[in-house]
Length: 299
Image (cartoon, rainbow, N blue to C red; front, side, top):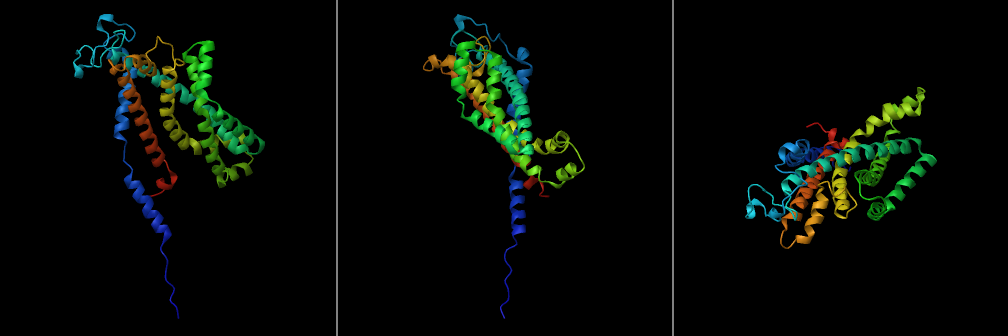
């Protein structure tokens, strides 16, 4: 008689793996929180923090290096080609980056979330039309459109915000739609339909709360894309007006002096890199923390 041999307990294996993954997650992304907190404080209190006017300079002080490289304490990060204090321009530029990111994510996230919910819930030709619009959106070259519109209309903050909203709303729509396709198969949605609830009420009361997590994660991950896009468009002259101290424009202005005054481009470039890194790490942490497969694991 052959004695059956018990196979491995796959459920326990999966549970152990999930617990190990959960333990590996940091409780808080400290570095991201510190960097973003500094940015928010700088944006909120820029007039008090900045020691100089961001747009006024003295040609006699042009291209002073940072204080660590032989500069003066009056200009700790040096000055640019017009004698403007780089630290003051970085601080005031933070206000632009924060404002652009908040408005872009608010408007773009709302549009994308609404279309994603409608597409996933309605299905059929409605889903097909919305998703084809999303596909067309991803096929459109944003940079070329931005440069053409900037030449025709001139660079402006409104044009920049419109371009950035166009850039990100499709990401929200796709991710939310995928989540809604799962939610609409749940029993509580079927019960709501059976009770006679209208589609609008079901989407608002039952579907929308289920996609909040994915919206938060996508929004956090898109902050980096928005900051980089704003910096790129400002670098190309299609971003904010030249009178506003945008980080991308600062990098562009310093490229002419990269051999003799490298700090003019390097300092804002490093700030952009740190910000993108911070929001990306925060987005990854949120994505893992809000993963329902890990949230169900009790440590």
